[in-house]
Image (cartoon, rainbow, N blue to C red; front, side, top):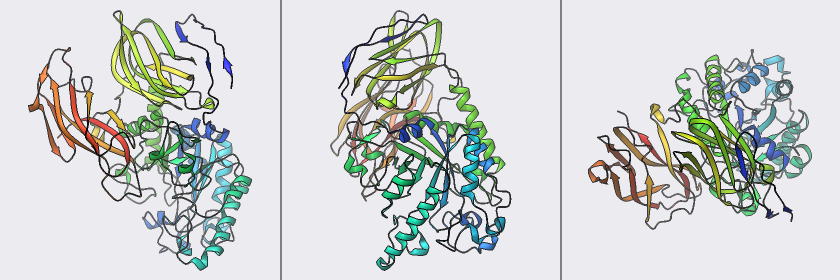
Length: 566
């Protein structure tokens, strides 16, 4: 346990750090070097290629002759260039999916790259990709599905064969496969066990993947978020209990700010996600490509909530990522850089408050907070305020910060801005407090409708008893129109068969300086419609008071207000 004594410094730029001495608790769970490196990437590109790509399916049904699999134009340099377009720092390649096809040279199966015409059976995508990643400065991660349908260890099996008599033999095969991919291709930074791994491989990971984060399984050091929608729950805590982590299947639902194990979440989402859901390329699927508003919504709700975004790519049967997809990646990267590459101002430091002053009044609508994660995730609650016309006004408020928290709000003219840390596990160590004025759409929902998160819940926030809560909707309901209010689960208890989410009751709307029952009604199960039909004076707030309770199955998610369109 150490005690740090700090000196207050006031730099000429009028950026203040209010500091104090405090004992370090000395018992915060901290990331190891592999976790820290992985989190700082923020964005990773999945690459999904499999015989099912040629079948136009999501899972290989072994219906295609291997002689027809020949990705003649395959170029792993192009994959890396695609990753760089949108700022990914790693490529995670699906080297073996559920059907058992292996993209590297192996004698463990006769269903793999050595049995296809590509490079006369001598090709090895992992070897090519390893060289390309080194060339472009990208980390390499590998997905090797623990199961194999050819062995009777199908989807969700975690490698357990239906016939127990085959288990020992399959364990040997899988252990050899994993050893091959981890020992031949340089430093591997991430190992993905989709759906858990029930085959003992801890010794292999320790020997051949000491610098990797592990997704699921008994050696897990990172967690699945709990959905494939591109959304992390908020708050997003990186810690949980060791007992939950040891299950190999813990998700964001098990997060606990006071947990004794450190394992952040990864948010995986297909690129082909616009009113569809495809991990593998198929003909005539460009209509599933999202627009930039949708991708930015994913960015705000994954990276902007402190998670790592794993966005998929789908090479086609030529082996190349289609040009139409590259355009989407390029626009996505350009929009991220346009918004966040150059802040109006930024600072950092250690303590309970940070302040930035401006030489002239600035209209702010975004802030970014980042903790120094090497010292752990410390912040539990914070408030951001702007100073104008002689008084401080709250702009945003939050709980978890972690690697990156992006807050957005209606633009406010301010002379200075400050963040105050209201609750924390240890003295906040802030690597970056940056402020922005962004002209793009802050965030959009489906169909381009502007949406905002007005509340969050985690497992335990609500129970099956009604609880009275209120939401200040003033800044979101500032135009004449109609607005939907609904809940959106982000993580759920996958072992529970009952209903998931929230229930609303007893709602009351304050608007126009009075209670306005005619302006709010239920339009479908658990969705409210709020109508604003007239302008009012600015001092009249819009307040929703409502009773909320949880449905039986544990969940976490967002409460959203979204402009209604017809």
